[in-house]
Amino acid sequence: MSLINELINDGYLKIPEIIQAFRIIKRQDFVLVDDRGQAEADLPLGIGYGQTISQPATVAFMLEKLKPKSGEKILDIGCGSGWTTALLAQIVGGRGRVYGLERIEALTDFAIANVNKYNFIKNRVVHIIGSDGFFGLSEFSPFDKIIASAAADEIPEAWLRQLKIGGRLIAPIGENLKSQSLTVAEKITDQEFKIKKYPGFIFVPLVKN
Image (cartoon, rainbow, N blue to C red; front, side, top):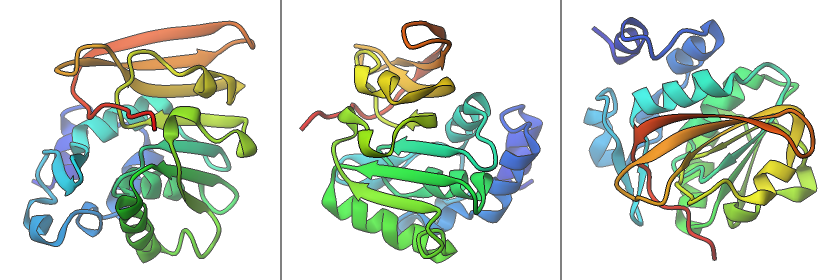
């Protein structure tokens, strides 16, 4: 059974647009050359510099909770390999925009090279920027959705401020680096957020430069 079918059968993938993105955007295009034989395994894989490409089940879970839609503008914090960025680009389509932030220069280049395999940058759907994700990307805010793939002690104020009213954010939050909760924040008003937490995840820490 293929990895995608396993994720569907196990309940991680449900939304048709997300399933289609997983089928089109091949994880093997975003891992290191030596790891391509493991690209279909439901495991996180190292991409260098202490960073990883996340476990497919975790990415599927996050996207299902984020609920990205066609035409939306999305901020992807800690884009790493560019895999999640490309999945989001496939979902938002030509009218949408995805901004990927990566603080490690070599991984910024890695993400650009990987995403370029799908022409998203050429078609101006994806913009990958070498920047500290802790502060978000105010010049292109507000965003319909924000996703982060590195763990913070709490949701940075900049992320909440840069989210549209009615928008949704998902990020791993927790002081214990051995376990965090994937936290979903829906912005009700400028000062009011609906928060839901899903415990039991492990991510690399968010580093503030």
